[in-house]
Structure formats: structure tokens, C-alpha cells
Image (cartoon, rainbow, N blue to C red; front, side, top):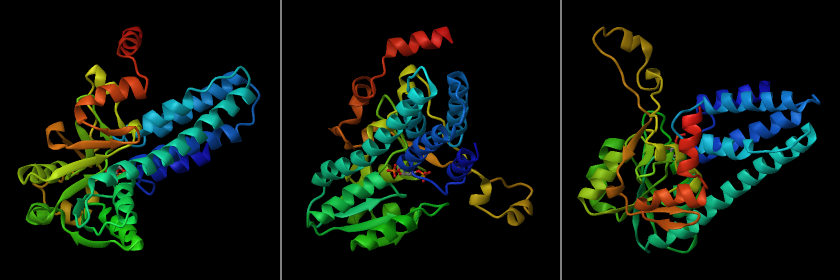
Length: 314
Ligand code: RI2
């Protein structure tokens, strides 16, 4: 179990982060746990795998990519440990591969929205959003990027390092300068941690005010997101839980404890309504947020009636 606990801790502490990356890490952790299992009883194997899945799901609550990936891997079948293990490993490998392919395809689709000479604003550090930007650059388009710091964890620093590596001209700005610079921006490209059945996008805190500023100035905003970031349970009316992280990410404890009347709030994500989103670029196409339901039902294969029946049974 040690390897799984280590990976779970890395996801919790955000040493491993980014909705797609944590999904792949969870699939990898399930696979390695199955490989390490040295018993012969299928019942014991199933129990251990379920416990492992529970540990991984509990690490971060918002990115739906995590439970979606775990569900895909845990759909394994087999009457013996060997059969079950083989199927689980096949599923994990297939998820990891399709996830990486999806990010590339999103780049190919989303980059068509970028024109030669565009200035692109992005927020946080999304591999899907960066795939769009990188592909536009690869296609020979002359682009500039404005990247936010993304307080409090400063994922923007990862973004500028990646863009620098690609040779893309980039300016780093503080999060509160988003509206100030919006007049210079042609298009906003962000990622997603979860997308609800009604097309709302949950992404790094600050995305919704960036979207509001873009909407106000009639600047298009595109979301780059793999289909496993769509949240099936929102079809049942469930809300996506917004992770609230340790206040020490925002302020050190000494300063804070000296102020008896002050508390710090640190939500990690916010919700951008579909009306602020021009298009969601997925690996199955550039879609309007309004058809998110179809992604959940036709692409992810969730059936509302089955889900309701299951809920009633539970
Ligand atoms: P990709 C990240 O969350 C950011 O909110 C980013 O936009 C989103 O995941 C998607 O990232 P965090 O882990 O899957 O930094 O596109 O809290 O890489």
C-alpha cells in the first residue's frame, strides 16, 4: 500500500497536480498496486483495489478527472487474480494513453481558433490549454501570451517556463491585472477541472473573473478540456465540491495568529457560467457548452435512468 499512499500524498500536497496529470497518476497507482498484489484470492484482490481507489478519490475533491479515471480502471473484470490484474492493467494503460492522445487532439482542434498575430491570455497551468497554444506556435502563427501568476500556488510560473521552453513570447502578470490587460487580448484559453451537465466550467480560482472581464470586452474565451473532465453526477443535480485549501498557502501562521479578528479563505476553484464560454475544445470536437449533456451520455456512456436507479437502490 506504501506506493499508493505516497502518490496520494503527492496529489494532496499538489506535488502532482493538474486535472489530467492527477487522473493519470491515479491510474498508474492502481496499476502498480495490482502488480504488487501477491495473494491468490480474487475476493482479497477486489477488496484491496477498492480500498486503494477510495484512498485516491479522497485526495482532491474538485477535479472530476480523478473519479472518472478511477472508475474506468476499476471497471475491470476477471474470475481469478491473474485475469482481473491483466484487465485492470490494460484499462490503466489504455486510459493513460487515451488521455495523452486527447491532449494532443485538443491542441490540433483548439489551435484553429488562434489567428496569426494573436495575443492569448491564459490562467494557471493547464496542459490542455498549453497544447492549444503550443500547436498554434508550431503551425507558424506569430503569437504572444499573457500568463497570470495564479496565486496562491503560482502555477503561472510553470506556464511561463513551459512557454519559454517553446520559444513563445510571454508576459507574466499578477492576477489582479487581468482586466487592465484585457484590451490587448484577442482570445483567452483556459483549462478545466470539471464541467457540469449545464456547461459550467470549474477551473482555477480567478478563472470566472477573467471570463467576466473577457465577456465585458467581447473577447472570446475557449476552454480546453478532455471529455473525462465532464462530471456525470451533475446530471443528478449534484454540485461540484469546491476544494478549500490550507490558509497557510495564503498567509504565514505567525502573521495570521497575531490578528484575532482575521480569518483567511482559500478556495482553489471557481465556476464560470456557460454564457461566458465561446467553445469547449475536447478531443471529440469543439463543442458549445450547452451540449455538455451529450458528452456525458453519448461519449462517457452514462445513462441518467441507470444512475437514478442506482441512487434509489443505495
Ligand atoms: P490540465 C489545474 O488544477 C488548473 O485549474 C488547470 O486549469 C486544471 O487543473 C486543468 O489542467 P490544480 O491541480 O488537466 O493546479 O489541463 O489545482 O493540465
